[in-house]
Each structure stands twice: as structure tokens, then as C-alpha cells.
Length: 545
Image 1 (cartoon, rainbow, N blue to C red):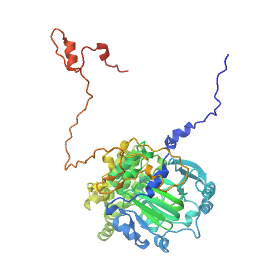
Image 2 (cartoon, rainbow, N blue to C red; image 1 turned 45 degrees about the horizontal axis):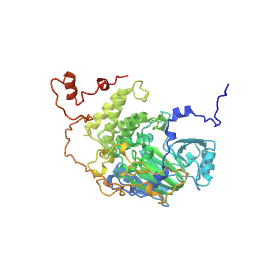
Image 3 (cartoon, rainbow, N blue to C red; image 1 turned 30 degrees about the vertical axis):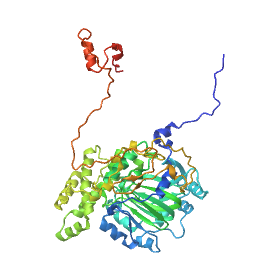
Image 4 (cartoon, one colour; image 1 turned 180 degrees about the vertical axis):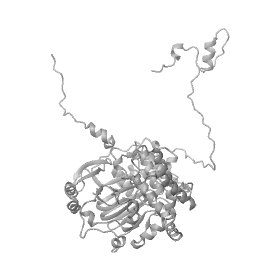
């Protein structure tokens, strides 16, 4: 009897449990070197003044934020007194990754991000991570740490966020001390080696970010949170071609921002952004929700719901915090005496009042959707009454539901019109693909962990430059020229007539049909454009199976 053949190749074990939990995202490699180079070489697009990045002095930051409603990013450049003026506290002496490991705990496990896939990487201890940082560049694999929680550590007692962050944070303002646990997302350490790239994302729950660079440097690419840009971002995020598309090429008003050691960034919630690390860096930062950006924060929460973002990547206790926020502002708006009522109303800004309208609508929707009331804090026995009283007080102030935050409305300026309105994401150009020549393809590259910012191979990734506010783009000459498409502007909504284009059936040359040679069958087939000489069996429709 012939013996069965057996392969001599080693059998590969597949971790199906890991695939079930992580999906196929780990298998998709991102061309992060090309993306990083595109960010570093990016030329700022024209933008609205309301969405420009402001550079302010450390002593002027609080006044600037309160006078503008924290609608745009603010940068405080490094200076001798910047930290003390901002209220940032850091340990004495140089803070290195090895010292962070010593103060936080060398056995502390840290979740990493694999830059090549932009998904979860291996779990390291801080001791292993310190050894990884001490190794020469380029590192393999290329790992990024963006969420080292400092709560309940020795380092937590030695550092503090800016005083303005503590003032604006809704957790500090509205969360009752009796309710535990509270969200602790205000203080993180970010450890990034040279060459790291973080693709476009919006921080969880639409939260704002403070960012202080201790060592190294960062390059941000910021996208204004207009309704058009956020729609394009959602379309890009839900596309299976996300890894091969440079989102900034599809958005409008993008701005590049470079940070070096000592710089501090205050980024409002809802701004899509990506980050490049040109050199090893250590950053202190954190997230916080504010009363200034309530409408946009709630929009981002709903976007996360539609994208089905996992709970571990969401803002903790978000719904509970929104109920506490409503109760906090209700106490601010409630009249007691005429004198105190005026003082309290003046302490609530117009941006906060407009945001409370959106908050009331959202809380009412949550009440209708709630089945077991698990997301409702137990201290509020009559939540419906709370919302109605808030709406009544806002209506008394002349702020009704039709009022919206002007920063999130649809802007009339054509500069904010995204290209996704012209083409769906399935037709967007990918990395190494020219818009005008579909035949060209770039050979697949192998990422070796090194960030190559030279211009030697920039020809395989062309970054479009917006030259006019109508978003007409300059492109490299194509092999063949296609006719230019002109945009048609409609002054008012027009009724669209939908026409179904059915495939034409080829007909034979017309022949004269006589009564002697025709029949009912022949006439029917001829009227349908079919040749009656074809056998009936060939015209039989396929049966549904």
C-alpha cells in the first residue's frame, strides 16, 4: 500500500482567538513612511481666520481662550517662565524614559501601538520599554506609546497639567466627589521613538488635548472640524481603503504645526489630526471635556457610535459626566436673588449656553433610548424634570433649540467644501497613485522602521497643493489628458429627475413581416427587439435558486 505524502514544511499555527478579538486590522500594513513624509512636506492650505492656530504668550493664554470660546488651537512657545506661568509642574532634573520607568514602576505593563499597522502592538513592561528606547535607531518593530496613565503613581504627584486645563475640565467642575470612580484622563505620558507616525484621529468623546513637549519634537497636521471635514473624516474612517489614503488630501483648511522641547499645545476637541515624530520624544499631556465645545463633543460621541468604536477606546463614564454637567449648569442658571442671579448668568458664556441647548436635546434622546437606566446617575431621581427646567431657563434667556454653535455650522465659503462631495471615498487616489493616470502603480515598499524624509522618492507620492479657495488642485502632467470637469453651482435646490439607464438589447436589421409568416409569438418578440428566429429555449429566463 502506497504511503500517504506528507509536507516537510513547518505547520503555521493561526491564533483564531486573536483574530476574533482584533479583526483583520493587524494584517493591513500602512505606508507610514510616505504618510510621514507627506506631513513634513505639507504646505498649509488657505483657511478661515476662525480656524487658524494662534500663538500666544503663557500669561495671555487664559484670557485668549475665554474670549474666543476655545474655538481654535493655541500654542505657547518655550520660554524661561512659560511652565510657571501656565501652572505646569514637572520633576526637577531631566525626565527620561528610564526615570519614568523608575517612578511609575518597572513592572508596569504598557500597551503599545504598532506603527506599521496603526493597531495594537505588543504589551511591554516599562523596564522593557526603557531598554527598547535605549537601543539604536532604527527600531524594529516601530512602537509608539500614547496613553501611559500616570494616575496613582509617584510621578503623578510630581507633575500637573496647566491651571487653565484644571479650570476648564468638566470632571473638576461638575463631577460630584461622592460619585466614584471618576474619569481620570487628564494626565498621560507619551513615549515615541524616532520615525513614529500616528494617523488621523479624533480624541475620544471629542475631548480637548493639552500637550507639553519635554524632549524631542513633533509635527502635527490639523484639520478644522467643519461639518464637511467631519463628514469626510467619517467616510474615510469607515472605508476599507483607509490605510492607503492620505486624509489631508481630501480635507480643506489643513495646517501644519511643529512643536519642539518646551512648547505647549492646547487643541480643542473634535479636530482630526495626525502626528509625526522626527526624533525620540517624551511628552506630557491629557484629555479634558469643556463647556465651550459641548455641541462638537456630542457630535463626536455620535460619530463614535456610528463607527462602532469599542468601549475601551471611548471616554470613560461619558453619559454620567454629561448628566453631572447639566446639573452643574442648572445650579448656575437657577435664580435665587436678583443680585446673585445676574452674577451667575454672566459667569456662563454664550458658547456654554448654546452648548446647553444641544446637551438638553441629547439627554432627552438618551432618556428615550435608555432601557435599564444604567447610564443615569442614581442621585438624579427626576431627570426629565432636570432637562425641562434647563430648557425653560435657556428659553427665558432667548436661547432656543434653533440656536446652534456658529463654529460647527455649515460654512458658506467654498474653501471648506471637501472633495468628498465630488467623489466618494472609493474613488479617492491612494498612496502611490496619480489622480490622472490609473495605469501607474508604485512598486510595493518594505518599511524598515527608518523615517526617510529625503525627497529622493517623492515622485511616487504626489501631494496636491490647493492654489485657490475653490480647491482646484495642481497636479503632475498625466500621460493622457482628460477633459476638465466643471462644477455647476445651484442657486437653490432643484428637483432631480431620475432616469434608469437600462442596457440596450442588440436588434437584427428590420425585416418586413407578413401575415403569412408572422404569429403572435413573432410579433411579441419583434416588439421586444428580439429576433423571432432564435430558439425559444435560448430565451428562457433563469430560474431563481
